[in-house]
Amino acid sequence: MSLVKRCRHSRAGVVPALLVGALALATTLVGGPATAAQQGTLHELAAAQGRYFGSATDNPELPDAAYAAILGSEFGQITPGNSMKWDTTEPAQGRFDFAKGDVVADFAQQHGQTVRGHTLVWHSQLPGWVGALPSAQVEAAMTNHITEEVTHYRGAVAAWDVVNEPFNEDGTFRTSPFHTAMGSDYIATALRTAHAADPDARLYLNDYNIEGLGAKSDAMYALASELIAEGVPLDGIGMQAHLAVQYGFPYQMRENMRRFADLGLDVAVTELDVRMRLPADAAKVTTQSSYYQQVVEACLAVERCVGITVWDYTDKYSWVPGTFPGEGAANLYDENLAPKPAHDAVRTALGGGDDGGGEDGDPGALKVRYRNSDGSGTDNQIKPGLQLVNTGGTAVSLSSVTVRYWFTGDNGASAYNSWCDWSPIDCSTVTHRVVAVATPVAGADHYLEVGFTTGTLAPGASTGEIQLRLNKADWSNFDESDDYSHDSGTSYADAAKITAYVGGELAWGIEP
Ligand code: 9MR
Image 1 (cartoon, rainbow, N blue to C red):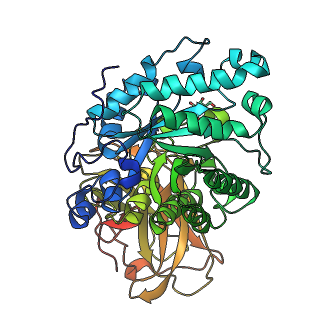
Image 2 (image 1 turned 45 degrees about the horizontal axis):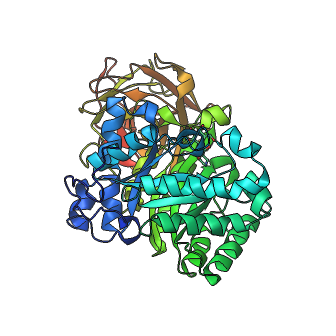
């Protein structure tokens, strides 16, 4: 391993205090909240709040230069998704192989990041030889494995998930070769062994579905209380937080974190992602953003919550589609590495400005072009043709964009229908609905809201024409002449009275 132990490089905006042990201590790591709020990376924003913001990564992803650039700059902590697990590090008894884990640790060192080691003792990704051992030999194999791995990464790994996923959903202990051989004592033994190998590493128990109050987190709470009472070296609880929009937000996450903190433990969100059934739509994307935001808010509300790690930052390398067929879109960046609305929600929750896609604090450089495709301004339909153009230098994730065409309903029914008739980006990716303006103004008591379920607009690119149409449910006529966004031009031109938003923030045009 080429790591220079206990010595890390700093990078712009992060002082060298991002050292071993800083996971627990992270206090003022950047110049000041005002600067961070303007321009900070996710990690710098988190660091200004005394937290870290990290991502999982995996060896096959690191040669992807665009991916690695964001991983190395936006995040202050990384977790190897697979390469420190037992099947990789000790595939045959006594034969240790840390080559892949070292690649991740070296990446972290080069980018001034801390490492969460994942994971020492787990029933899964366990090489066959462990399960085949006679019970009487399992404890020695486990303690040897922990000692070798933790010693190897002394000074390079700040915190370890010593035991991963010890519980069943009902709070009973999960069966594993370790539990079979030692009963639940294997957990204390594992923690003591890890502590002996690296007294400076922060030692965690990590599990999923323990984010909210419930039977499983109660079991973790009881175990943690017991271990503390017995003087077992336990520093923190890792809450994986693999959430899904269709299952709701964990019940009272903040309270749950707080009760562990009240035991004197650190809490970390270790594997955050928020999946959904595909295809994504505006409602799911909004729910997802809100879940990400609520996790950040919960962590910031509990002093002992030391940081948040997302389980990789991009849909490009998510574990979700492979495990839950038909689900995905779980991460902060899309498959083209463009930030999604959830990214903006996290930034905002961390106290930063919503940058609407990562462009220097700007909500996004977009413009709307419009032509009137309606031969009559007094019939029962309104037919705007729209084009969205990226005028900036950074890709914009279309799922973070909405557009509003403002008009008046001219009495008649209050219910509307809207249609996308044709677009080269495919109408199935275009969402549209008519929304009543809460406080109507001249020229606008409604707007047609257009959104996108997917897609990325590269710098300079246009969506091409999106042919839209709307009518009242009673098919009564409009008088379009006084509509705020209406223009009689039948060729495409920039339209300042049609507004566009990135991550909910005005990015183009003037509202009525
Ligand atoms: O991200 C990991 C994925 O690449 C592996 O195929 C998978 C195998 O179990 O493990 C994934 O990571 C898991 C983590 O180690 C523990 N919590 C659940 C994670 C997602 O499955």
